[in-house]
Length: 112
Image 1 (cartoon, helix red, strand yellow):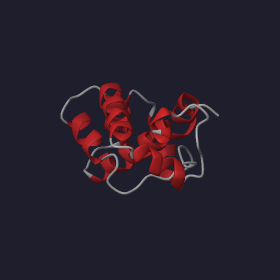
Image 2 (cartoon, helix red, strand yellow; image 1 turned 30 degrees about the vertical axis):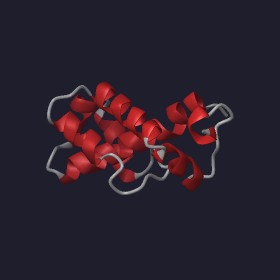
Image 3 (spheres, one colour; image 1 turned 90 degrees about the vertical axis):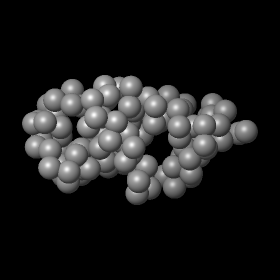
């Protein structure tokens, strides 16, 4: 599997799951979370209940800054993209891949 496939199918849904959970803990309603993440309310419900985005484990605190950005008005795509860039630049993404027993065929970060 290639890195973009892993990000699309596993990592980004796990990030959304964690963002939704944090936002709910911070007092946002599922409807407010859905609006900020451009999702349906039922998708948010599935993220929060663990029915969606459950195939990847993230370390506690991985998405805190990303969530704060979204709550402060940064577009969710920009915030998630910034997080992915950060995870790659500090090689945290390699730990996430190892923790989830995957290694992308094309990962330049993990090879370096």
